[in-house]
Length: 223
Image (cartoon, rainbow, N blue to C red; front, side):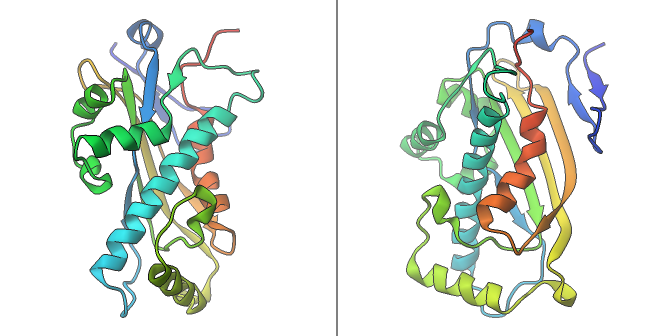
């Protein structure tokens, strides 16, 4: 049997992991988290330009990447659930991609096996998020988006584009996959829909979305 579908206790969505994961990844040393593919599924504001859309998606892509990296490391719970591999820093990952003329947006559609080879890691995490709301206040991730975009986002949030005036959205859909550099196969994956309270700060929303994936991320040491 090439893989096993697991349903984690307390997890409403199943995750997949190959049955011989430890054997296949015995020689793995380092993995990297790729920039997220971020898709907007809501109603397009009338005053939104394509430049606005591109800049927001790329900024959010980096924010989700940074968040997942941090959430995975935090999931060790102070060393009680340690990993047996290392994680390439997100700054190094984006730097190498840039040096190879691969933009954030281009990385979404580039073969992850190829990206793993370019990054010099054993596997990469490729993730996808669909949501009906734009983020604001990405400064907590050290992401600069420009004054004009900050002003646009402030007006966008003040206008309350959430349908029906609701502050809770159930339209966040996520998928995460760990791709092997050697043969491009999926070693582990998880997907789920999750509610997010858009009254929260961007970092709280993004961390909340990534938390479950980080919690069930593999490569844990057997203790």
